[in-house]
Length: 561
Image 1 (cartoon, helix red, strand yellow):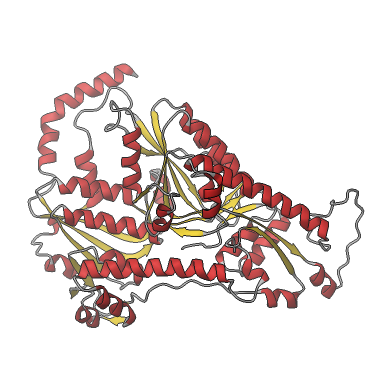
Image 2 (cartoon, rainbow, N blue to C red):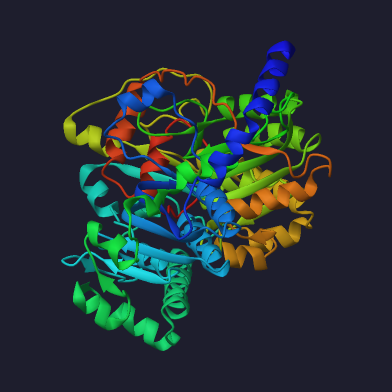
């Protein structure tokens, strides 16, 4: 292997003049870089095998914010590159990812580059929020621009379940822990209303401030622009939200590009300028990114992407053992889930943090169990629009007695033990059963508060004041000392580099941790039935029932999509 590396190095030295020439001719003066967003926008994308790409020709390809940020940093120092054109056909992003994308475009403008956003299919609030960072906004001539604002709500199904004879029994620690309330109430609780109002208000403020700053209008005018939406075609230009109308082939002309070759793919540009002229003899140090995405549980599910404690634990242990890995970024985009699985992940992360620096990057949502796993990190980074907190636990049980009675179904049972039927879906809960469940919930909640107190170096009484299941925006979490720094993935990487030894701080490359082969989920009939019912429910209650079998859940009461 060493001999092969030496031969490769010798070849690189021989080809160095040619590579320098190619790099110098990679782009012409006045070149624009282009990137198209048509689907998911995420911080980091795992490299795909060529055969997998062939099988997924029709799949929407995710755009990596990390790679786009690297391209912007490279073009900012390249006088030959005049600007960046971002075409947004569809934007699959929560408000956290949208904030990161907008920050990258703003960074390009701050470096003196022109930034144009083309919305050939029109767009809504998030598209306008991102596009407002551009110096030029082009809109499809016959499309709608709809910065309508934000709304969040729940469908309350208690009366419907009563008619069906299904009795949901929800237990929660913390008055703001409202996950499951739509199963047991016919209207929104005051605590849930307060949380949702704060989040919707924060998102609306972020949109208004972005429009005011980007379009050069007062905040009052920006709010009016939102209230007067939607706009069709030319009306968006007249309102000041767009600069011109253009079809795809007209945008380069409006940007003053004389040749097709003056618009270069941003990914291809980055690959050329980032490729080392001479290869290393040894492997570079690495910053490993460990993703914790989706609900947290023990078993891989058949109904959606989940983060299991076994899979995450294997990645954490591998990062601990790999001498090449100098630090770890936990990338959390999860509303939480199983309290036990969250605790098992937390234990592994604590062991890792004793040996290597760990920084948590919160994406769109990092709440409840998502915050539990973040607590051991040396620093926690979140966007102002990230949804986090929700330090609390909840448990849910479906009693099917009424439904069985209506259907003429009876159950005969034989049991030993005063609480042998505690977890059964058939049979009432008496006061003793309820007391037992409440005791278990309270013990888990106290453990959760203790974990946060240790991780954040705060007294437990102070954590208790911030806990009680309350959900925060990233801005509010920062004020409450639950988040250290506001920003996106690029900020998390910079924070981690500060914690690394100076000898590897700048050279360590960011890599996505290897994900072990996912186990084939075993179809469990009761869980399958719960998931079938869950498909009819709001997102957070859907997750609540999809995790049937988990006694205590650290699940956030708000799911942001």
